[in-house]
Length: 123
View 1: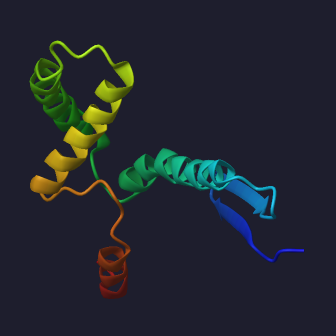
View 2: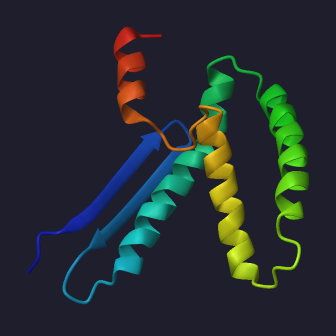
């Protein structure tokens, strides 16, 4: 029996997320990716609550995101003229947003080193 597994439990106020996967020879990589993805989705669903509890005006952030989305959407969709491959278009959208956020120094991945630094400072 393999001792490889994923176990995740989060209970904080009204947030409860329990994910378990025992990994054996029959486990497919997509099963692992799915479980990890559902954990991240659960975290993302609760980020807004954290922002509100921290005193951040989420509506203001949403308004800013809408402005960026409208502007970015116009520019990105213009680059798809003549492309019929819908999968390629979806991948291209992901590429563009990740690239744009990186250039703007607004990463969309969680930087745990940065979080650890802020958490230690208590700020």
